[in-house]
Length: 232
Image (tube, rainbow, N blue to C red):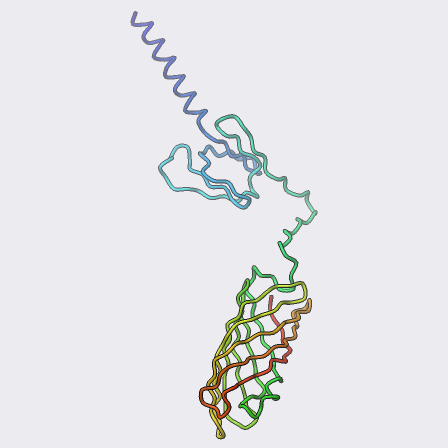
């Protein structure tokens, strides 16, 4: 009787051990290593898992590019894209929209604006501009050098629509000009279009139009006719 109980206990022990061993996922790496795990999340870029011997421990993250396949505990398999043959370059992921400026990258540029000379009587003048942007956001800081002497600045914040040739922008901003003849402080709208070349050189055509709180004329405008270059 005791021998029968020992045999039954051994069978149960083996059965439980086999069940525990089967209740796991096997991650097969491209270098041949096998990870016994409990996979928690799979994306096109990475795989998250917990170690089967430490399920209460931290979540580990590995690149999906280094994984050949995963065998799940239910017996199913998932095979990941094979790496390209040696010497063959990997294909670049195409952007959703073919644009002159990549919306997924931070953009910094600078330009010289001669359009302000048209508004020289209103405190305008040539300006040196710095542009910042990413995605659909664009802003600029313009250092204005009035033809009548003095100093000024214009800051704008714009929404940018990407196109294959560059993009349009529309937003608002504020400007101040200090000189010996008259001071200006205006808040208004800013808009225009930017044509961007493949090497990063771009051309702006637009205008800032606002209400002047200090000048003799309540209407303040500053044309934007500039050429510049952007890192992208």
